[in-house]
Length: 243
Image (cartoon, rainbow, N blue to C red; front, side, top):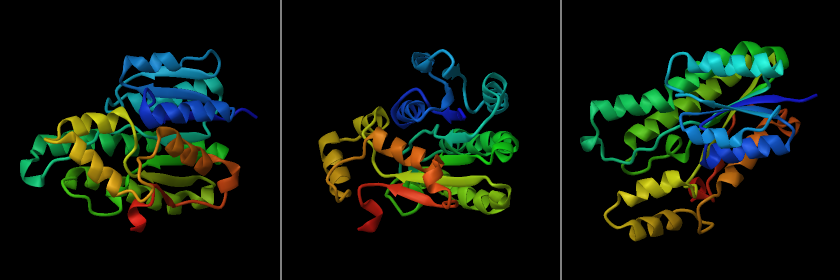
């Protein structure tokens, strides 16, 4: 039986690695991203790229419809699309707040709501990309942390609500991940080298995680080997929250 997934934020970083790992595991994938670079993932009969804004109202239903229409079923939703914001709260505008929730939280709610009927039929899974910032306090991440905390709580809530219907809902909570996402944020620091040193020092393994390491955790949470796991927030953080 060929399984089918929808992955948001699929064009680069963690999302791209998730698509690659799912393909290696035999999944057919609808890969959603606002970037036209998502087209690079196209693979006839296996990966359908969908260049679309996850914040746009029609996108969730359209993405789920592509999966069920082209592949006949939906077994996994990976809510990965997100933006990062590192800024003191006194420097954070209402516009910053609204924009971050519009990307990081609202699509998770709307994609999940659109996917649940199909996932109930297949007894499928949802895996959300949260963050250690949704679990612990991290300086200058008040609004970003709020968005990831919302994802953590939605994960737990839906795991309870849908357990009896056979749908598992989990999340990964990465620490710093070596992606362009982090490079862009660090470039705005007054001293990027010092910022990097602090980041590495906060991770006991002495380095950032790779996108593939996070992707492996996501694929594990969707696999039969994790059939007894739901409502779990799996930290992939090099020991950050264990300090």
